[in-house]
Image (tube, rainbow, N blue to C red; front, top):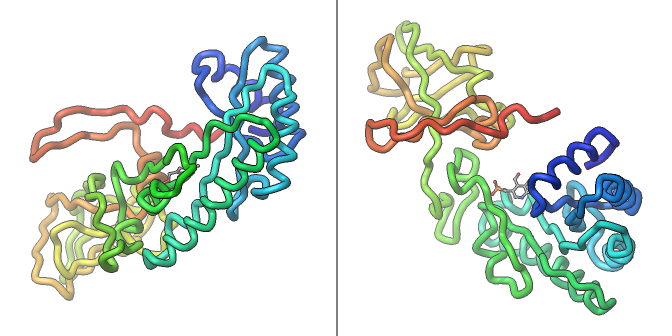
Length: 279
Ligand SMILES: Cc1ncc(COP(=O)(O)O)c(C=O)c1O
């Protein structure tokens, strides 16, 4: 959480949700947060964000030095280590993922040992993801795993591979985007779902469900083109087509609600509370 306006919001969050843990990678940020916490009269939980390729401080001695600074800050509780290796989550095949995540998490556990040798309690070592949860859960010293996508899954995660082959079968696909066929030409059906309906950060397109041989292509903000030429599937305007999105997290962020469906019954409508909170 960097910069005065965001730190103010972090303090406001800590006032209503005191269990929230914020991560830091620099002394300066730890001091800024502590100063704001002191001014507001609130206690903050701070963890060190360890670097595994995105943000954070290097594990080992640099992290120990930062832990020493964090524990000296007023109104700060040192929570421990955030050890999220996002790239490990998507490494294929499984054996390579296992090797990468094990190496990263071992660095985190070793960093905790080093911090504790300084007499600093380091309760939390949290890491892991949908792709690595079963690897990380086996590593002594990891105290918490933090997978998220498993609740929905998506086309990318289905393809990262499991211990038994190219498909990752630990979790089922639960998230679909439903579109309607709005236009039809020989060999082509156009649906009302384009860039605004699916996150587009993956190098592949949404996967139509139960339409063998049918492929989706982007056709604009509001449109997608289904190529039916290699398929026996017949679609008519008005037909509804369900897709597994390429990437669940940013796709969910495009919608106000989720319709929770069992069979053909909508059992609940869940608001997506964190949608659009990127400011
Ligand atoms: C810090 C952190 N932890 C956990 C996760 C969950 O990862 P996944 O959705 O791959 O299970 C994410 C995902 O973006 C993350 O950024």
